Structure formats: C-alpha cells, structure tokens
Image 1 (tube, helix red, strand yellow):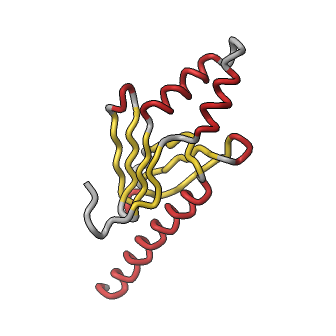
Image 2 (cartoon, rainbow, N blue to C red; image 1 turned 120 degrees about the vertical axis):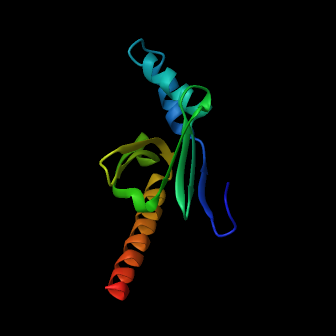
Length: 133
C-alpha cells in the first residue's frame, strides 16, 4: 500500500525486448531454456520503484514478493542487455544479501533514481549525526 507521500517512479513488467530476443533464441535448441525463463518473467515478474521503497513480485505465479527500503541498500550494480535498451541490476544490502532485478526497462534511469534515493538517505543520516553528536 502506498501512502500519500510515496511517489511511484517506475511500475511495470520486464522489458519486452528481453522476451522478443529470447523467443528468437528459442528457435535453437540451446536457446530454449532462456525462452522459457523470459516467458515466466514476462508473465509474473513486476517491479515497483517509489521514492520510499523497491518492491519486486515474481516467482511461480507471482507469489514471491520482496520489499526493501533505500536505507538497506549498500551498493547498486547493473549491466546492460539487449544492445543497452534494458538491463539487469543487483542491489547489495547492508548484510550482503542480494536482490536481483532482471530485464529492467530504462535501467540506467532506474539506476540513477535508486542511487539518488540512497544518497538522500545517507546525507540525511549524516546531517542527523552532526546535529545529534
């Protein structure tokens, strides 16, 4: 549930290009497992990125849900896919746990947004530390 101060930056499914490229790869026997993975992602994987948290719903029939706040994120790693039109991202948590997000459309913009939210949280913490001694 989103409260009134929470603004959605991105909400949606994986990139369509991922599905298209993997269906084309599925015409070869070697590409068939990638095709199945892309179809499952397209059917049940959903991202919601707000100014407060990141939610990822996925798994079989979309039954798995992960929610993290920006204060839990230590590092953001990403890699372009599909000629740079979409990408994969790994969020490394403070406890070194990882949340993988595959086939994110406009992943560079999403990565920049996530990093800016992390920077805002860390600057808020550091200013609180200075004020509170």
